[in-house]
Image 1 (cartoon, rainbow, N blue to C red):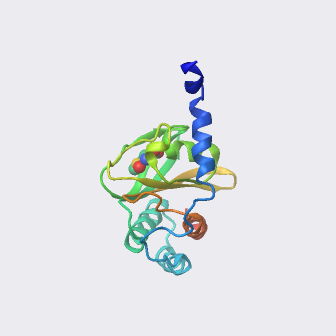
Image 2 (image 1 turned 120 degrees about the horizontal axis):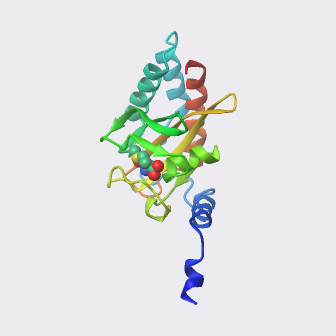
Image 3 (image 1 turned 45 degrees about the horizontal axis):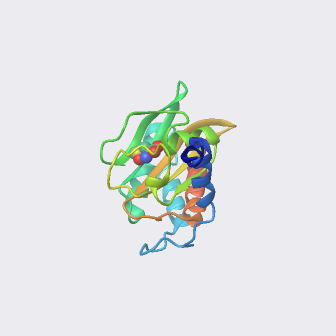
Length: 181
Ligand code: SME
């Protein structure tokens, strides 16, 4: 009978965590000042205007977000190359260089083509801990003309740091960046 409780597959547990975070309980991140994403998007547009190099533009995007977002300990892009995610421009401690599609929060967001908010990384089956300080995480796919180009991964040392406002704001940031990738 004990087997029954263990019968839930990794993918079922994964979906349960994703579903439980779809409508996070707290609408605004605790103790974090409101982030003016439209203003950041304007700053980003100015920073990357006239530059066509993808890495340069992603690098400036990470630097800007790192400067403007509160309560984060890692922020960066993983680029989709040869069916894997490969570390791209980032801010924070050194991180794992490659992530297989379907692995961790990044590989899952990449495989599902959807944003994933994880309120408690310890509850996410297969979470890859690059920095033990990370308690919550948001990963957004960057998709151009139906093709996965990268994911944007942001970690926080606070549990339940990210909500749907961050998701919408960061989607605006990605939309601003996309024509310059
Ligand atoms: N936590 C991520 C791995 C990347 S690091 O957080 C920088 C994941 O589970 O995919």
